[in-house]
Image 1 (cartoon, rainbow, N blue to C red):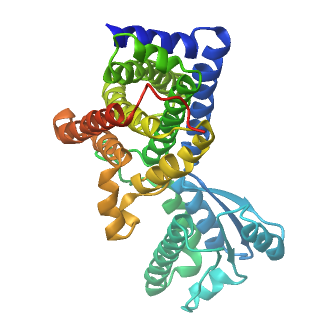
Image 2: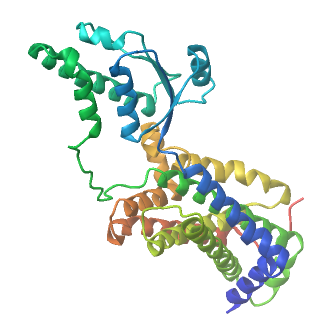
Image 3: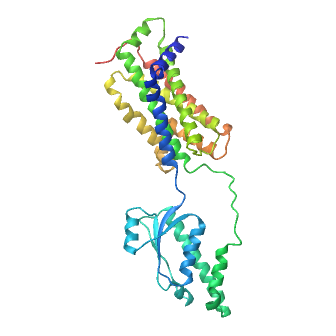
Amino acid sequence: MNSLFIALNLIKRTIGNRRGFLLFIVSPALIVSLIIGLAAKQDEKASVLYINSDKGPVGRHIVQELEYTGRYRLSAAATPDAMRTAVIEQKADAAFIIPEGFSEGLKEGRAMRVELLELSMSEASFTLRMSLDQTIRQVSTAMQALDASGQADDQLNLVLEQVEKHQVRATRTDYGWYASPALGLATGILLMFLMGLVNSSVSIMVEDRKQKTMTRIFTAPVRAYEIMLGNFLGSFAVGTLQIVLVLAFTRYAMNFSYGLPFMKHLLVMECFLLAVIGIGSAVAGLVRNSENIGAVNSMVTAPTCMLGGCFWPVSIMPEFMQKLANFVPQTWAIEAIRRLGSGQGLGDIAMHLGVLGLFALVLLGIGSVVMKPGETEAG
């Protein structure tokens, strides 16, 4: 019962007035939602510039086939220099030039290539090169067949026009057996946001120690673990409200697709929230001076987020760092959400949720032991 009173008091202090509600609930939720919506919303079409110097039908056919794929946003460039400048300044993902006499060269059997411009190898430039090579091979094969029949000059335009109709096409069926490509980025941003609760928990407990509020509570018949549990429950209630607002706003207002059900997503985030508050409780028990609060971010939040895969996949890190990543809760939360996003069920992530709960239990116990509520602020 003592813990509930402490929790209710913490909630009232944090969001009990309009200023606190806007500062700790509405503003962070809106900012994080906008970051997720803008950063994770990726344009599937790559920006590609081109110059078609070919006077024959093949150059036009190549451009037409690239547009048909739907993977590129094609724009004609005025000059080669302007096109190269756009690629260097990253205003375009890639560019290509169809040289003059391209159609005539293919008719004569010469090996003709399209000049591809790219600042560095990327998925867009690689697929563009594959699309160009495939289209050129198809045209060359058609020309060889027409040349063998002696109708190359008369029938080439008709053949290319018939190909561009795409009367025979493949149908792609997406069963959703994979996680959304933007899920990792959105999850990393959300986990970093929740790690900010560590600073919040530490600040509140250090302020109570500085104002001797914790000392007065401890002189009453209240144990140290009850004080820690009360702060834990209060922070959990505030964090839950923040999570619900962020998930609801990104899903229904910004129409961002996470690729997994709302309640399962919320369950994983709640388990991670327990681990985060456990970290905050343990750190708050160790911090004795309000001047050291700023060091919490550089010593706890940023390193664990980098190690846990919030900025990049854990799989690309060295092997020893991948092993260390198992000791931070972000790793388990991200992996659980990716499994849910690929179609797995709660039974497949039971171990991940259990590890997150264990993080919370152990860290809360450490915080209860190291916290000395009878002490005031050091220094």
